[in-house]
Image (tube, rainbow, N blue to C red; front, top):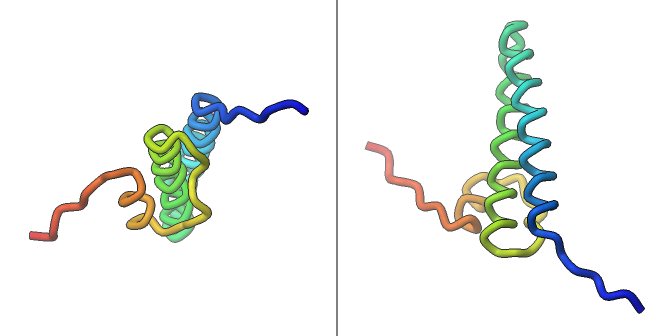
Length: 83
């Protein structure tokens, strides 16, 4: 039986490439003055970048979550309190 090995580099690339594509879509929506869609797709891009960081740090698949605060926590990024 073949043993499965998790490819961190390939998985990080998957998330980063998806984020780059989404950012292009968000920019197109912004330029078309479709601001709610631009914001939504921008959120997806940020989510994918955070998932790439989680994969890189944890060396495991990213969690099934859309929560940016949760993904920040999993990536080890601390947010400052608002001023």
